[in-house]
Length: 183
Image 1 (tube, rainbow, N blue to C red):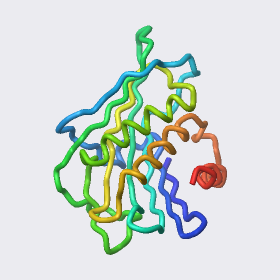
Image 2 (cartoon, rainbow, N blue to C red; image 1 turned 90 degrees about the vertical axis):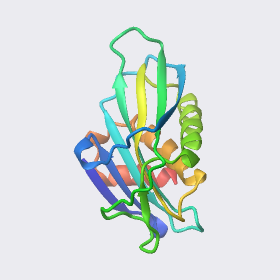
Image 3 (cartoon, rainbow, N blue to C red; image 1 turned 60 degrees about the horizontal axis):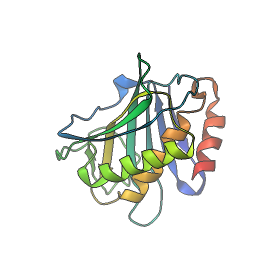
């Protein structure tokens, strides 16, 4: 499922749910990771999710971030969060939501990796954890000028919270309203 949204106040968003073939997975040069206690929540139906966000504010206005969730097949009591860092400077050739004057680079840079990891840990603690397994942040793109730690932190919090919802059975309007409430 792919949902493109024009939100209030000129904000734009695109959401991919279980659409692995549509997304560019980042090759990892290095991985930043952290184990956190898991919870006994019901299993999550979403295996891949990504969010592209464009906000019309100052110079912190673009992020594309996504993760794959691999549930544990054992009785492990932790959730491992990994951020795949790639500093390769390749331009994203597909159409993006970024400002037309700003070039978009593929991958999660080291600059944004730590804020993604920190936001993921904080968000999972806030929502009461995640079922045991692995969350691999392996989809990403950032604008040459228009990205920042702040927008990647916001996008990370949003997709983790969205992954807790039954997005497959929600209407596009319900999803849009939920996203609007997070901004």
